[in-house]
Length: 420
Image (tube, rainbow, N blue to C red; front, top):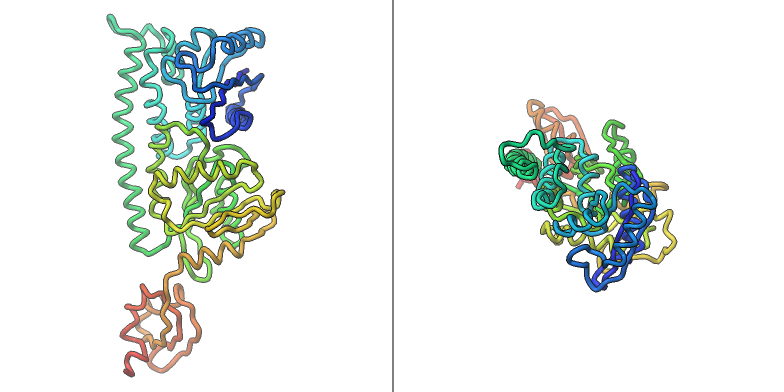
């Protein structure tokens, strides 16, 4: 499909319009749209009726006819009336950045939870806009026919009823799913497995970082996750149990962020990001080669603030360091690691920082474990750092560094305690 992009620059915008429209172009290309041209305008604020001024709208209209355009995509979320007015004026389909992102998320969703969250966000977006669609133009399930309407009932009324019923059903299903997720998190906390969450702007390299750590620690290839050089390559939240220096931790890869995410989508995915709220450590992955790294950092930090996760210990990972021109880059006042998945720069430092932040305090002990206490020997062999092992007549002698949370299991077999 051939599309035009339209955006405005105001004094309140975080990004300049060229960067913002280039990002919009990348989003459009995810859906295989062909971007024919871009239109920009500097305004104090969006036009309340048509987003852009009448003169600029006339220019866009000429381009629509001249290039046989299928869709015009606006760079901000349009109000229901703006959507209706621009569609009437341009005589073609009009969508905004929010709806474009929703369509991408809908395409990328692979697991049940993501599909439920995205469908709910899309329905909440569509509900207030139903009355502004053209008669017979339905965006529910690929289109509807007016032949199905009841007596005195318009297609828009049917669509509204359909969406309202679906919203109620989706909310019910999501509540069930959330309870299951929360139960999983509680189980992990009981098992005392620290959670390390990867967060970052979309395409910053989170999934590639997870794969690099899996590969570096010599885990099975089937533990790898999808990683592509494109926006929103995956929307799933992946969990992988990793181990470094006999310290186990759960590495969680979350969805990426982008500027101007739809409000309903952010609210929906807050629960998907529950893992972040319960993390013991956050690794904030940044594309250090991107000239807008500071703005992208702010976008992610705003989401973390909304999740009440801004006080969790955080490591800032300056990823793609092999492509970075400004080698003096740093983030003042926080732990920063220069890192590259390509040449493994910083990977040992990253693993050490994870270990420092997640390893439980340990107790040095000398214990004699009876031969009939095989379960205790198994815990030592799997979870303790063994400094010395000797097979005695009455059991196995160990000199160990044991996590303090496990020491109570061995107190009765501690030689020093028995002597005292």
